[in-house]
Image (tube, rainbow, N blue to C red):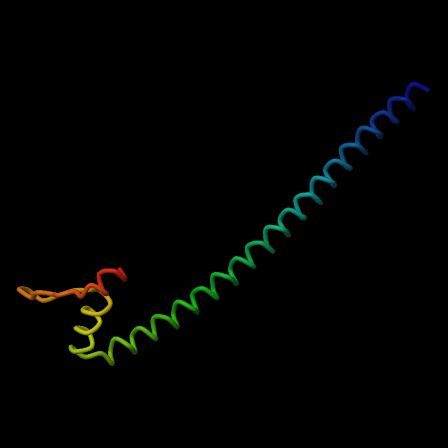
Length: 99
């Protein structure tokens, strides 16, 4: 009798230990799968962002190569409100009120 009780207790302890190991392995695998899905979606989004940035760079390089000195001066004057040295700018009342 004593041998059976001792053996059944060890068997029960071993079963509980093995079950806990199996559940922790399953939990670890599911965690790894979730992380893999998350990282792969981030990678696809980053690759898409890289492609968009490359397209923008190509467009800007085309614009830059097609501009001449007059275009740059026009952009600086109209968009950036820049002036040359010793240049005086006059504003009308309508221009001052609209700002």
